[in-house]
Amino acid sequence: MDYYKELSTAVQNGDPNKVESIISRALKEGYRANDLLDNGLMSGIEVVGEKFGRNEMFIPEVMMSAKCLQCGMDKLKPLFTAGGRKLRGSLVIGTVAGDVHDLGKNLVSMMFTANGFDVVDLGVDVAPERFAEAVEKYKPDFLGLSALLTTTMSQMSKTVAYLRDKNPNRSYKIIVGGAPVTEEFAAEIGADYYADNAIEAVELARSVMEGN
Ligand code: B1M
Image (cartoon, rainbow, N blue to C red; front, top):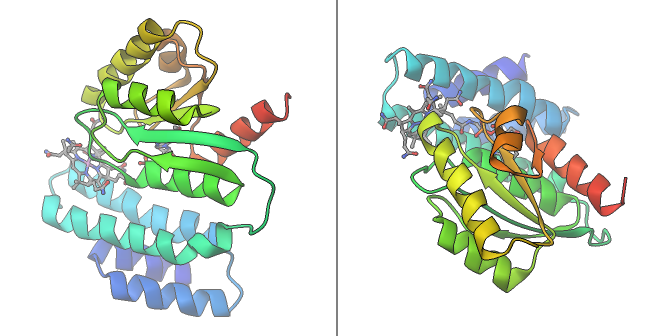
């Protein structure tokens, strides 16, 4: 039984119940959560993205596929959570203004939580002022900004500039990520770090906290 393919197809078809039942079966048979995420769920949403880009899928269908991905991530979440671990640090995270894509951000949140970080998730479409209020209130070690659209990358830049103007000596580090974001862009806008994916983001945060 190729559970990865089945899972990918269920995401493409927008069938959350099927996603849940395939994951249950696969886990019983010893499949690893990480592999089900990468080879099944993510592979399905990639195909959806390609079809969406070619106008072969439309927003209502894409939203169902997104729901499937979130459902699958929620089902796998307990397996990423290592209970009783020492708290390593804290993160405030959000998707920048004008952007409602939240699955990547949710995945980053999930991985940080699973690795013992305290996470405050501000949600989507977050204005620079709200990020500024949150870092003032929660005093995190890291601020994570996510953007999925080329058109909202400028909001990432505006947010970093706004935070710099508010507090030129900020103590927290800014991590940026999302499909259109690059390492060069991160450096250009004055973010501290770029991470390609959720695991890379948490690994780099951990190594910063450990002083490596
Ligand atoms: Co949108 N969408 N969408 N969409 N959508 C994309 C991004 C697009 C590439 C599709 C395409 O055309 N092929 C395209 C963007 C083109 C561009 O700008 N370059 C696009 C478009 C155009 C749009 C609209 C403008 C469509 C329209 O209205 N005409 C619109 C914009 C709405 C808005 O935000 N204002 C729109 C709407 C939507 C839906 C609402 C239908 C839905 C979002 C639902 C939701 O998020 N709850 C949606 C979806 C699902 C997608 C695709 C298909 C999947 C995105 C996703 O969730 N991927 C996407 C195509 C694609 O990406 N292949 C597409 C899974 C997720 C886990 O990956 O978010 O990339 P991702 O996160 C990755 C990394 O990027 C990284 O880690 C994760 C992996 O571990 N990462 C970080 C992300 N944030 C990070 C932060 C970090 C570190 C790493 O540190 C802080």
